[in-house]
Length: 283
Image 1 (spheres, rainbow, N blue to C red):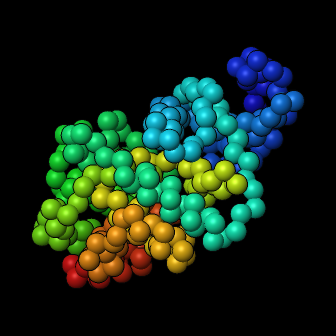
Image 2 (spheres, rainbow, N blue to C red):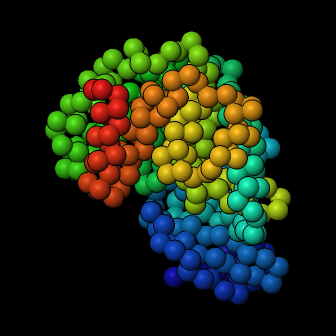
């Protein structure tokens, strides 16, 4: 149950209603209603996860990119702005998304590092981020592919043969990526259709999994589920053209991580996609 009295004190106005919205990956999500507005309340078992999410949302705002305002956070809840969605044409959505992501991906860091200043999250999992990692191939292998593959293997979802193929891929990953052409860019990290909202003011990013990466990690995930159509790619590539090996190498290499994440959550149904990535990469 939601302690409406507690949140009334936080908001300095009476919470009249707490409506259950959905079961999130780490706990129930509610909409709180007062006389003057609506708020989103995410809950979980005690952990630092929601504080990490609050930090990421606030970090996005530093770059003048829309994300929900955070009002209160603890080890068991995150109270934030409720984003009112509006009917927006598909074409306009794709233009808004492209402009927002092109702006986000233009953010770099003075240290030219990959990762982030603290560990972040994706879905129910922690994403480790080394603050001193300057080699993209090593970061992608050691901080993303191998930890998630190990998780899947230990759960029984990833067969030993595919685990061995991923180990081989990671051991020589530096031969597949031209490091000279990659600049660390800030990415949302988990950009499926449910994590970007639209109204007439523009696009709003929610549930981030922030870190500095090859920006085409984000694009590969967008391509994985065809999140956006042709207009998105037209607008985005006016700012950041695709690399020459985007479809041949980077799409399967980066989608591999997201197939593993989905396998870790949902099980063997994502094994075929994982194997297809490995086959395309000829591992």
